[in-house]
Image (tube, rainbow, N blue to C red):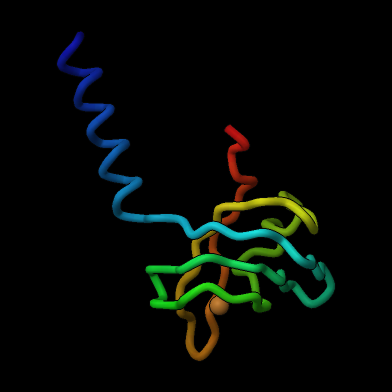
Length: 94
Ligand SMILES: [Cu+2]
């Protein structure tokens, strides 16, 4: 039983390392345009430094999870000439 638990913990750690999330703060959510404006920190996955910018979202449902003023963690990836937000969640306030 102990060995199984240790393996699960290792697998979870590996998944986090493979997909690091960037940090940011929501400035604006535009459901009609399916975009979100974020003041974000460095985004390693797309080699971008900190700035405030507007991203298209991969799935408009993501916009329902956050609102302006929220601190968030998110993932972004290149899609053609755009950089698209593929996941977003409120940051833990701990
Ligand atoms: Cu940016």
